[in-house]
Amino acid sequence: MVGSLMRATTPLFTIAAMTNSTIRLVIELDLDSDPISGTLQPQPDGETTQFAGWLQLTQALETARRSTISNTARACPGDLPQAQ
Image 1 (cartoon, helix red, strand yellow):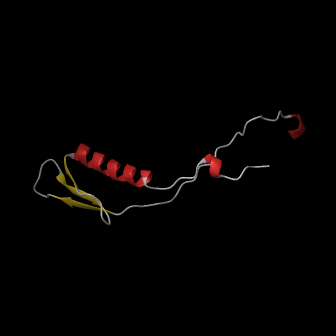
Image 2 (cartoon, one colour; image 1 turned 180 degrees about the vertical axis):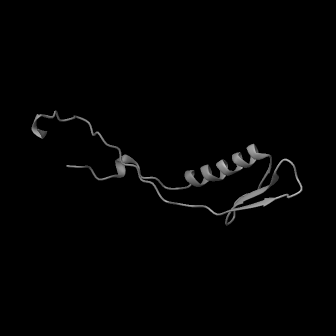
Image 3 (spheres, one colour; image 1 turned 90 degrees about the vertical axis):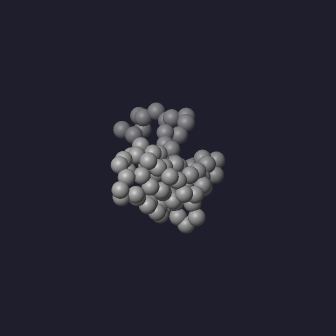
């Protein structure tokens, strides 16, 4: 009974443009340190970040991920063709 359904006045869907992107990271670990420590560098020409401990390593990874996301072009809803 599709005919008995009310028609929505606004779209009920969202279109998001996403890319399947990856980044290459170089992680250098100091094997003699406790806790874990070293450097992380996004490739090819990213800025080297030093870390000491698992929390700082996680933060460095998240910073590298976010900087890649912010540099990726995204389509705005106004850029998409309108459904008719």
